[in-house]
Length: 361
Ligand SMILES: Cc1cc2nc3c(=O)[nH]c(=O)nc-3n(C[C@H](O)[C@H](O)[C@H](O)COP(=O)(O)OP(=O)(O)OC[C@H]3O[C@@H](n4cnc5c(N)ncnc54)[C@H](O)[C@@H]3O)c2cc1C
Image (tube, rainbow, N blue to C red; front, side, top):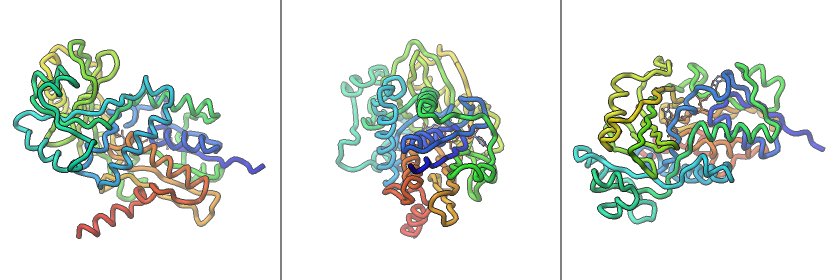
């Protein structure tokens, strides 16, 4: 019988966990190396967990919107019977204050012209889906197919599933070169590390957790904001995650939140509903998003021409790690299993992005 391929995954963020999970499902012998205790304090642990491909339609090529929808299906499949405690499939609602109305109108123009993917909701229709928002906003744009996951819950589920399949997480700061001696494949999912790739940069994101017992949402609300996509995401036990900022400065990798950002995020929540005035601040945190210059993720393969061994780097998920990592994981495990690139692979080759630039020129 042919020996199982041995795979080392470095990093137990969402990219590493999904890649390890998919590879273990393909029958590979997987070991994950994570330098922190699990769950690690990384970008994945504090993320919003939005699976919101259409929300990115202004800034991402359309093919990535399709990939994001595929990411949602993969999440459903991977979570299986645990979906109920980790995933919300109730879509998302876009709203704007009167002064930002033009942003919502502009966003709507990017959406597919006639489709079931979205609809305007006003008056009673808005009250039906989000009664507590309807009193204060007259109009919203509803995207039923978007979803969200609870980051720490899904990280925990994936870690347990991995363990059940015999793939353990070892706490160790790993060096890819060293691991290459012992494993057939090394998959580098280290997220933001200064200098591991020429054009990888870090973008700080901040998020706050609020407890508000007086308010209820059935889905995340995106409030149009001039500088970044701002979400108020309902979590169990009356908790709301409000984020996330985007600051082009990886030197601020301290887990802390700027006062200006905290004020902006809190006032967004307060402007959604005044009951947030009496909400309690449970947590404020930040992390660095690994990002390439085009903000699109990449898979780099170096197999030195050998079909059976090599090094693969998956990185640059920017603000799309939850949405796209299951799709990236499928590309990587398929490549290791067959030596071939699947239908989604070109999205992450980096070349796709240059083609877009060429076409635009
Ligand atoms: C505030 C905020 C909100 C966000 N919201 C969303 C969202 O709603 N939806 C979405 O899709 N994305 C969101 N993102 C983006 C998403 O979080 C990232 O794209 C994703 O988490 C990156 O995952 P990763 O696994 O590449 O990196 P990380 O999560 O950073 O994980 C990398 C891991 O590698 C480990 N590591 C590094 N070096 C080594 C080494 N030498 N040996 C062993 N281990 C090592 C680190 O300790 C770390 O645990 C958000 C990000 C932030 C900051």
